[in-house]
Length: 308
Ligand code: BDR
Ligand code: CA
Image 1 (cartoon, protein in one colour):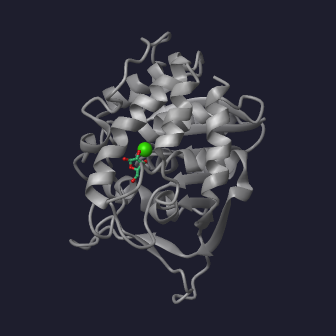
Image 2: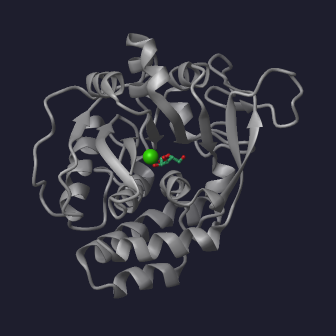
């Protein structure tokens, strides 16, 4: 199994991503879950990760990380995910405590001691990863690659130009993008093609399992703001795309680009500046998702959740 660490801010779509990963222990060796402040404050994202583990009957260790972005004040997305981050269902109480070690220390120790390179899947602001890289730059060589959800080729969902994860901590994102680590980035342009339908929610409900019910409840609640605000047909499953990629890479295609993050402009703060047409002539540092097989994505996701 491929060793991975998931860094996240659950969050409804983060929760679905964790469940997808936990459904595939033979493909993915999940060494730990690290949490960060993002969709909701750190206390909630950490608690939510523990409750999702309890729901999936997993004892994967959960490490709480940074409670705020590097420079900016925390902006949250409680309007999308609810005040606690996982609104709309009853989740089981945690069956384990948070680990005592800080997420950044866990990342550094684990990467330093890794017998083989580890893959990082990042589903939230990149604060923990950037702080780990600043503290211990040599860990970069033990990261196989980073598969990240974040950014937008075209339109942002937080501002006209910025996507939430990058907007919340643009400085951290720039540290990570400039690190030399191989990065695959799945932007809103791709995740907005992976929308839930009423039939998907019904399939989940008909599983008649705690996971099926929780997933259907959460997604029913989570879809509403996107539908009302953007007129979308369903809820975009942003974060599960990263795990789907690890399980079935052929669901996605990527394009090599030179990508930076705007950390200074008032209007475009947090924008991923993606050199799609190679105008800068600079060496590519980020592979940006160019297409997704949305039907294939759901063919993977729904049976996976049924296994839990
Ligand atoms: C990203 O922002 C968060 O609200 C979601 O969990 C996802 O990681 C989408 O912009
Ligand atoms: Ca997230």
